[in-house]
Image (cartoon, rainbow, N blue to C red):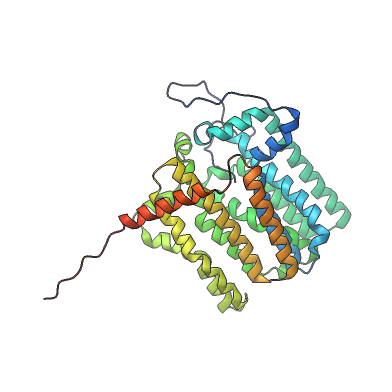
Length: 374
């Protein structure tokens, strides 16, 4: 997923390069990839695995609206992959300076592909998406769908460049949550009017917003160079337990309110099974002690997000057709995480390190002293 950067930079949203200074980390050597591995390298640098998120939401929107998912599998895959790569490659280019600090291993892959190539591909993808949306509207005339497509394009583009939402704390929340709900609205509006969209889908962006700051734990060094300070990390590590609990409880409170108001089925209460996980991740973030532990917790969190997306759309309206779509999205997510990501996907070491952080947190927890009867 995209990472943040500070303000300032070139016309494409990056930070202007500066000469290397004493104390700066060594930059990986630039080795251009040959043609055979160029596509795979592009997919790895572009974090194509996040297509699994978008496809699950897109397909769920079609199925929930009463459409036939199998008719849209190929178009959905194409649009989701193109959108994912456009967002991620743009972000790679925009973050090319601070990623030398935050992600030296990813920077090595980017330099093997070449940043100029990354820039050309991302611009080409944005242009192709814009043209396809315009053509779709010209042929189908679906105004609601076209509106969703325009918003999706603008949100994705303005995350790293343009308005640069990622440099604004609340802008980041808007973009990250929209990234998950907009594919659902995209799929839904192909089949049915947006006025009939189930409000229960709001549980996904609310859930993501409550934990989105966990992404910051691996980027603190680079963020400090750009003057950015994560409010989520400050909240987790501070003493304001009440505000933190309120943030973590937000998606589950929303579930309760939707059920009480009759706007969601009672089975949506099953979403609350994720509540211990939300609290657990906040505890892990508070107690990480190394960059390796931070990376392990972050990787576990990404998988937790996928589970949340799949669980929410399943509880809204379960069906065999949706089950097939979610299994396909999960299979892609797992395979791409292992083979087509810039770092290895979830491994036993990540789970072991996360467990070690949890054990350390438990041992640090204050214990109540036994009382004395008088």
